[in-house]
Amino acid sequence: MKKAIGILLILLVSIGCDSDPFKEDIIEGFNLDASIDFSVVNSKNEDLLNPSNPDSYDPKKIKILFLLDGKLVPQYQANLDSPNFFMIYQNSDRYAIRIFLNHNPKEKFPETYIQWNENDKDIVKVEYSRTKNSTTKKNVWLNDQVIAKPTYLTITK
Image 1: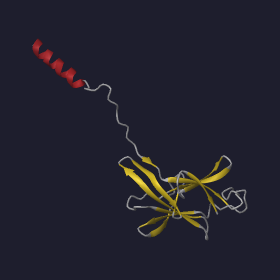
Image 2 (image 1 turned 90 degrees about the vertical axis):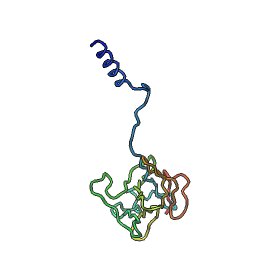
Image 3 (image 1 turned 60 degrees about the vertical axis):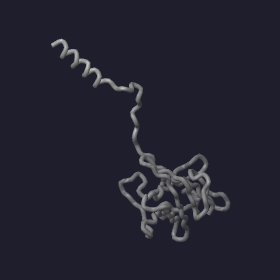
Image 4 (image 1 turned 90 degrees about the horizontal axis):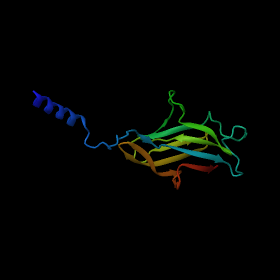
């Protein structure tokens, strides 16, 4: 009986022990880098997103469209914090706009159209680096011009 209890005790201790007590748990999550921030100014360096500027863009007229399967699709999701896929905020000395970009995995270079008003638009095209746990911007073009640092830039209109 003592022998059986001893063997059982050894089995329980060996099963309950981890072979590597310093092994770290893998933290899983998803990193989505699919936005870009702009300041928008005119040739006189006046802020075109500042609501106190009479020549500023009207946020109610700004539309974000994704090119999906060859068709421009307006973006709106009422349940989001930014349902129109953009947000305007004050950034130190001027206003900025954050655009939430098309990151559709079916598209090699997803395109996002920023329709500022009836007459003015810009196109952001992105090549993403994709892994199991992330989608990050690899290369970005604004109106077919490569953007060297695609995190924050100023557009002159």
